[in-house]
Image (cartoon, rainbow, N blue to C red; front, side, top):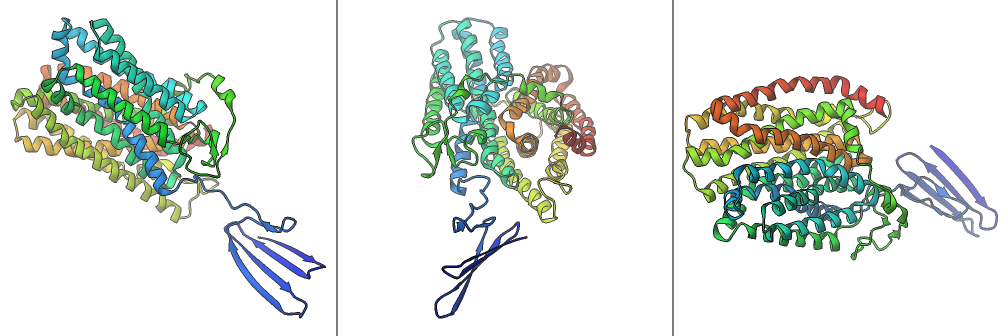
Length: 510
């Protein structure tokens, strides 16, 4: 507490300011010519009263100047944009046979276009994410969507196979950045206590893509032609480009701070008091492409991402095996199979929303217990984020152990869909936990660390995609999914390692 006292000999006016870390009470005592005193007290969050300027010092700035509605709009735009990459990957599957016939190629070569897409989907965010941490979110967002839209035109007009292959690589290169950049935007505007909720909203888009993709792809390829798939994606990319161009402000904190600065021109300014930020030399800086890979040498990061990646790969095993299992064992056509994916999609959306609320609740609880963001009583971030993770892991592992057997005995289709709903709910919750945790560990480089997360899980997901069908053919769905469940159960040994050694590794790094 500090007390400042000043008396003006001409006006016989005294000002006493008492300042605390939370608020300051300013008592203004004035004496007029009739020796009558009037006292008024003001409660202020100002840190002190400037006696020389006769005014309050600036109040402590909030983490973000954006209102709740503005934050929701920003996160919603990022959520919708985040659907681009997974939607483009999965909307393609129902059209593989038609493309093979139309371009007069082989199944192996067509499957190669799927493989290269997943490889570029995992690697490309390492470039774009690190660039977004330097240039800003807006220019990289818009630039990658331009690349994406150009690739969609090339795919829709592809006359021969090699053009399809190259354009598919370019499409992955342009679309895969949106998740890393979107996560960076969420980190820019959301405090740790509300970060989980906003990540829950943001994750809905990227989890919805694998679910509605096969539905749309099946309908479009069956009712129109496979080329119309890419015209539809072009229209989607154009709509998102316009939304970002007109509505999304620059949020990179190294450029605009809490949003009170203004950079990378937006036609609609959120705050009239914004001041322009002139850092044109940042566009001359090259991205630190190696940064996302360097995070993998951090012990807590690699342990956490491997645990998350194993469960992500299991989730992709469900996705990639569902079309063939439902078609061969339940005699469903393409559209019916696509509609079955909506069950998983509903679980993903609900799981993302609910888990976000749980993460915020857990964080507020530790704040109420007296923990803080720094100092000796620092928040045990691993323990806090994992509070609501255990039930997700338990649901995924238990269902995976016997899901394949339900398919193998041809259990009622409703049983299969309910199990897929539960797995979608739990998997999305787990993904939100680890995505939020990674940003908590590296808030200043949120896009880059999200690219690292994307790299690990996409590579493990690619392995699962290539392995699950051969595994089902050799072992049967029962033993194949039991094997996947046992791998997930064995990975639980990584959790106590993070809880015991994670805080120590984090402290040493800092």
